[in-house]
Image (cartoon, rainbow, N blue to C red; front, side, top):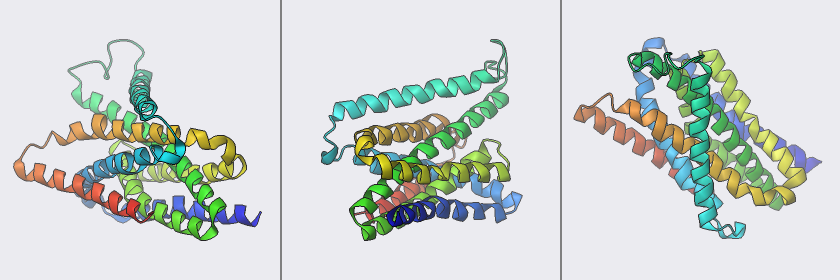
Length: 264
């Protein structure tokens, strides 16, 4: 029971600490946020791609899982297709017939708003899955060694900070109010505790699912970054703006790389 309390405590640290840090974004004025959001979206793209391609998928391919790489690739493909369908359903929900804002090519602004809302929904789902998996990793580390569990939880909190910041920015970009964005970030962060508690009791039975859960989470982040966020960057085509975007994407990816390296 004492070990379970350790797991729950550090799962809260791993999940909520990053949300608290990201919520400091609320302290910025509206003008400051309007200036910062486009830059932070670029940073978020790098963080999402970095977390997927440098963290989640490599974990799923680790030898101890014994999973065929082709199965990982198939899961990733099915995940991308599933999130494409999910986004279609979110957009379709706003329409009661074929001719509506989401389908009208002349209503570009409204279409962008609907896609932004869809991206916000997907980021909450993807973040909850990712946090759930983080909880499983924390529980597994604590079941191996208490010190390893502490180090793992702190490392997860470190690499979650830029991602949660990116998620918060994306939710604001999707039309969520500051309070609603904070609420959904906190709600999704509780997935860490849920994953840790379930793993504590059922780790032996759930362990074979871990690589597939990792890949599903990765597919959601890749889809959001590539399908929903990157197209928005193409609205700014000046060389200086492009260089700034590339630099911030690289910075987000590098931050995730450095954070993940601390796990080893």
